[in-house]
Length: 459
Ligand code: GDP
Ligand code: ZN
Image 1: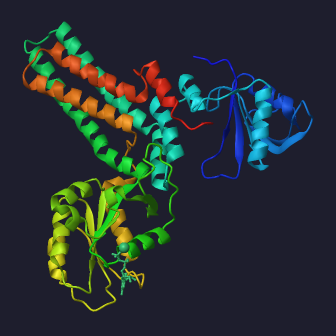
Image 2: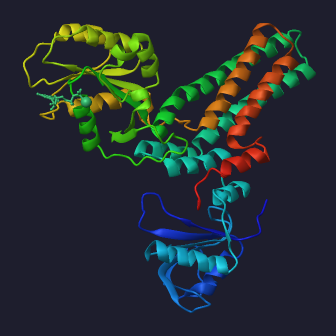
């Protein structure tokens, strides 16, 4: 499908707020740029070259900005159309003037995500790659960026394609067996083949889903609560984490404005110190609302930092906190180790079980490195860190993977019940379709429009 008009938008490269680019894509991109550019004749320059010059408003003949213009001819471009990028240097006022001039010359302002949509429609990228572009724009940490880059690179796509191919081949095999029964027990053999294949694909999908949580965390930050009795050092811990680690700007779409959040990046793990229902720093959560309800609140956290005082004996309040975090992901922090020991560390270790116990003196800035290591280890443990895994970090993908897994489970159940093969095939085909939706193979036009409208302008 080819779009015929030329679109434009301001597109700021990731991490470089100072430079802004006016990007054009479409059949008129080069001639529009050539009309308003002084310098080389852009009609004659080679593809994928960059040129210095000025943008002149043809009407007033005034100079709008000093620029570098790159010219990229179809089809080796992001959109597979002619693309021109005007790198402006004169700040936002100049950029807007350049954009206005480009629009005066007949380009149309791009809808959000329209560049990426064209790339998709022109076959340059598939749907999961397009969504990865969106994730890339929102990526909060280097790790999250890597996940998005890998996905854009097509890792998820190729895995999904392989699984679909497997399913398709199995169905085809079974059909052949039915049509050409060389053995009496063809029915039995086909069931066996189905059983093996559905199990294999199901395992692969489960694997993807199990790392999906990490992916989501990477994008949205780990909801983290700091709890402990009054005066143990919760505020000090919060301040230390915020000061030692570059705070991340928070503008995740869809988050409620009145939730107080503080983002910090701890060794690649984005922590979202959340204050939903006042759990960010809660002195008396258990006392106030009881163990049961505080458990409910704490369950919404991905990570809990439970702070104790080395200088005081363990109290019932402390024991209640241990009770409240049972079964959740938590780290015990024994603070104020610069003071005299009054805490029974054996009891603390016993209560903590396998969870890490980290000794700190926040006033002396001791133990913070160990705490950060512990946080990092929880979420980048073992294979997750190998970097070779395909992460699924997109909510839509996770939904579809779950549906695919469910359809496969239906198929597996039907196999166990010895149902006829054509019944089993319905579930297998459904699985194949759900997987296809991830990469846009069976996605409807409405879905595609909706997805691309979520993109930032200029991408
Ligand atoms: P919160 O009530 O749990 O938030 O505790 P704060 O962070 O407000 O700290 C309570 C008091 O303990 C403050 O006076 C801190 O300066 C002090 N404090 C915090 N960490 C340490 C520490 O490691 N050693 C010592 N000696 N005092 C600390
Ligand atoms: Zn406090």
